Amino acid sequence: MSNTYVVCGCKSWNKRVFDDVISSLPGKWTYIDSKDDLTIDALHQINPQYIFFLHWSWIVQAEIFESFECINFHMTDLPYGRGGSPLQNLILRGHKDTKLTAHRMTEKLDEGAVYLKNDLSLEGTAQEILERACALSADMIGAILKENPEPKPQEGEVVIFERRTPEMSEIPQDLSPQQRYDFIRMLDGEGYPAAFEIKDGIRYEYHNARLHNGEVEADSTQECL
Image (tube, rainbow, N blue to C red):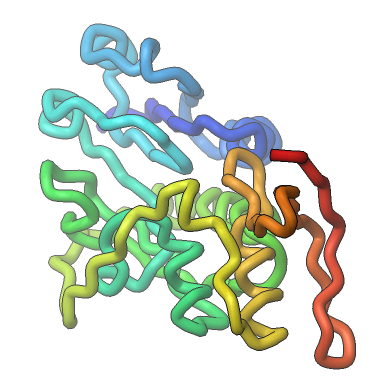
C-alpha cells in the first residue's frame, strides 16, 4: 500500500498546519493550494493513497474522487448539516459545539461514508474556529493513518444547510445582545463577508465583537454609500 499522501487547502492556516504538523507524519506528503494544480494527471504521477481536503473552495472533478480515496473534513455531525456555510448555520441555530466529520468525498455533496468524528468547540470568532478545526483535522489525519478505519455509512436524520450569500451578512433587526454578538463573530474570518449594517447612508462593518454585561462592543469600519 502506498505511503504517499496529498493535502489540499486554500487558506493560509491550512498551509501552516501542513508545514508544522501534517508534513511530519509518516509518509511522503504533497500540498496543493490551487485548483489548477489539482489535476488527474498530476495525481497519477503522485499516486496517493489518500487525498485530504482541509478547506477547498472549488468543485473537485469526479474523475479525481473516483480514481483516488478523497477525504473531506466537514464541520457538522453528518448527516446533520450537509451543504454550505456550516459554521454560520450552526451558530445561527444556537449550537455551542459540533463534530468535525472526516468523510469520503462522493458525487453527492457531504453524503459519503464517515471515517472519523471528533468534538469541535464553536467558541470564538470564525477565524478562531476555522483554525481550531484545521488543527483538529491534522490530528484526525494522523489517527486515520494509524488506525486505518473502515468508513461507515452515515446514520441519522438528514438536515441540509443553505449556503449563505454576502447579502445575508447584513445584521437583522431586533436581535438580542447574544444573537448580535454571535452574528458578528460567525462572519469574522479571513475571506468571509463581514457582518454589516447601514445607517444614515453609511455602511458599518464589524469585527472583534465582545459581549460584556449584556452589551455588545465591536471594532468597526465605515464607508459612505
